[in-house]
Image (tube, rainbow, N blue to C red; front, side, top):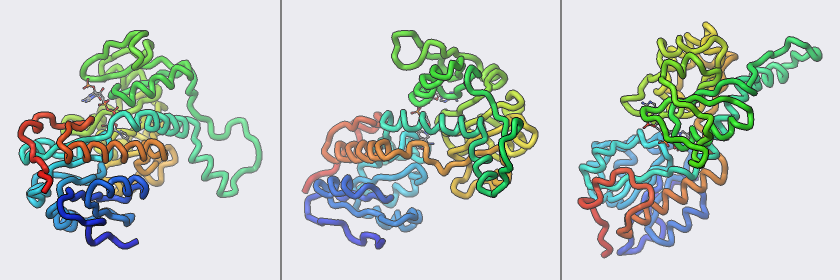
Length: 347
Ligand code: NAP
Ligand code: GLV
């Protein structure tokens, strides 16, 4: 489909909004009722150069988590007031640069929590029970009949679940673990005050140090935000601490796990299997992962249910509209900017 070369419904006096990835048409239409909107309807993202030129005269922009927004890009957008990330993770945004430029940054927490927890669970089960590997084998015509020792997997029920990054999504995953009678251990920098009444996580979740988490978990799900502090939080030495035959799920961000070290560790069976929704340098991830049967790969679809993705777009649009209408947005990432923010002045 062609790109919109000019804003839809261009009208003097309306703020200009750029939507950098394809979104749901009915939601886009709602945005068009309020603003002059230009959007990208193609599958591919714009290059940085193209985006920079399209940002000229734009007051608010919707971006996805693969789009780096840094000082250099912002320098090309002198009228930009709001950057609205359509994701909860915001490692793609240089928040200091946004604040320095007076630009309000927002994200989309909560609306995708349950969907992402579901996908983490799907990955865990797929890796544990060798779903993808046995599907490939079956399709290839290898099946001769029932065999007692075929595709033996890891027992999920009653196994110990470890969660690295027990925030909103980690807690939603921990709640699911109760149905599988799994003791849950977790590691955050700050232990949570979990109680039976908290309603945020099951009381069975127990804080442990990172070393104990690595050594004790039969299943380890990674959910820490990506930052310089969490780059390769799981590298060769941490992977070597994991139990032989354990299962690692990374649904956080590529870069939290050292994928090259993971390839080497998987060849040694420690961990025994991995499931990755996110990878370093995605979509051009480490091709050494491809021949490994004990790896399940999905293309960053953790939140990809219709309801969650629509919720994300709606919240991102609401955040953007709030900022352009002078209201504090619900999911403000850089509150320090508020008093000194650039303000869109309706002409
Ligand atoms: P959240 O509520 O902010 O939870 C993050 C947790 O990580 C917090 O409890 C935090 O606790 C902990 N943490 C941060 N740094 C840590 C460190 N160095 N070591 C140990 N724990 C650390 O975020 P969320 O909504 O659950 O989302 C988590 C991440 O999932 C997002 O940032 C995003 O990257 C990813 N995500 C991916 C998908 C997908 O499609 N694959 C979808 C949604 C989200 P402390 O601050 O106490 O350490
Ligand atoms: C997706 O990866 C998100 O952070 O929302």
